[in-house]
Length: 199
Image (cartoon, rainbow, N blue to C red; front, side, top):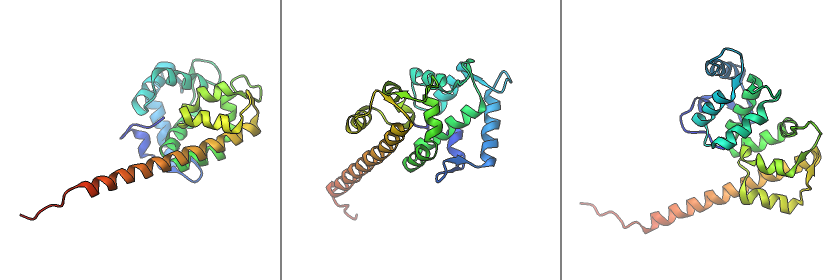
């Protein structure tokens, strides 16, 4: 999940150490939420949420609707500002890998409760796989973690926390390797360029 360039959320002052917005920025986010709330019910319905997410993120329709269902805590067909605020923090964390790691560490209990849609005190491995896109942990990285940690079919909070930290570490490792590869390609291009002649 990635924010699009120039959207309002990118201008918020996000504390990357604690993965929180300042009081002033929460107020700005609340004002933005109220502007999105065309029905003045202090909630966003699925249509409003869908269009907001299409505008600010790179998610497809299915992922957006899965996210909406996850954030619709009361199953009312609407999400509250509290859920919207959590989503904004997740979106902002996904922009900075170190923030995502901190967010997952500081707020792992809250995210566990969010993923535990049945309220059973556990989450299924299939749910982790389905919602990995929320934290940019999908595909090979996700399956590698599941295989390496021998993740059981049902995870309780303790196993979930180990999984979360492994995801953050592997994602950081993958980003470092991608950055090294990009730097190497740039230096190769620079070496291959013919010298400029003065005229």
